[in-house]
Image (cartoon, rainbow, N blue to C red; front, side):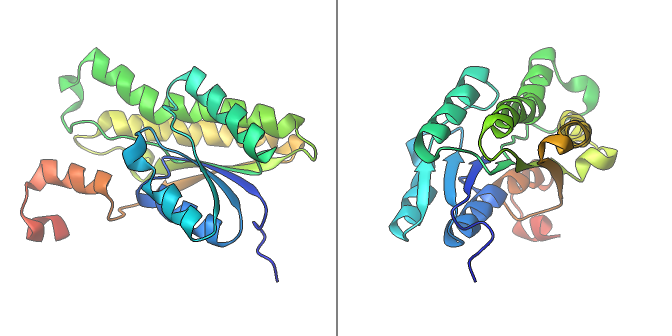
Length: 214
């Protein structure tokens, strides 16, 4: 029996590492046409290159999804390549230096919002526009939030704030676009052993592997 995603077009932001990379590998091996859109340059292309060598239909498009012009180009290139977008996984995120709420400055605040909340909204904006006009219409969107967005986290208030915003944005969009056949859900991610979490833990406990494992 064919996979339910076989031949579907899947867009994944932040797809070169961690959760995004795992999703890209799974979709590609299930026969989906995958677009990977990390913020980094050629050093981030390894995942796409490897999946292509394994026979996957994978396209690498570098994009800073906190910038509207990059997101527009990403969506346009995806359509030029594969014709439509069936699934979108808005997973790109970044975690700034950990500190108490009043110790951040305004530039850091704006950067955190741009990378972790505005980016999700921009991607949704252009993904939804495409899903509403393509034939057949509709699609599915998943946005990555975090357990930190459920109740806050000491030392990570801005990240937690942004991830809480992702949840509210997701719930609102789900209500607004259900009539168009577009499902919008959130992944409330916990503690996965990925580079971003290791970087955050390192700021708290230092380089001691035993403490990081705790």
